Length: 113
Length: 109
Image 1: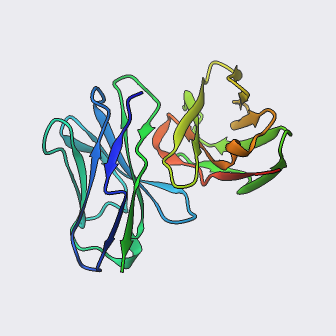
Image 2: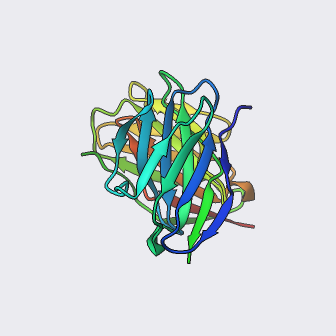
């Protein structure tokens, strides 16, 4: 069964450092998403991406965040200067054209010290 | 804007009993609803969906009920098993972006 793959599974970084989280969506999907989940809390939307541009973004997705689809398979989330409060699980998801169901990756745990 | 929320943050049931997880939504224009299950350390996974022109849909041991009059969605799990222990989220196509807070289902042996 096709799956969304995320790397790394866990990253520990120092405050102020740049972090890039990588995702390989399902190959025939065209809609891509990043969500985050702080420990014990709900899943929060960050950004959606379609046709090589951001479709929507939340208030969380400020200037410190950026997304990119550098090639035909990867979808990345970059945090330029991490803060302690960026510590969370980050989930990538993708969706096919005309579909309603999101397929999520297993997540990348980010720990900012 | 739409809000998608859940009534109960934690539900504890005995193994073998039936579980009912509830969700409220506010956007009456939503036409598609999805339940996701998130096991510990994993991403949410699709369980079952229902369109707004239906009021009930059954899967394997799971049933989703939709009451559009009161904007309420429920997930029923028959004969709950330890493997059902997880956080369950409802999600509305009216806003693909918002998840409810989640209900943690704990199954007691």
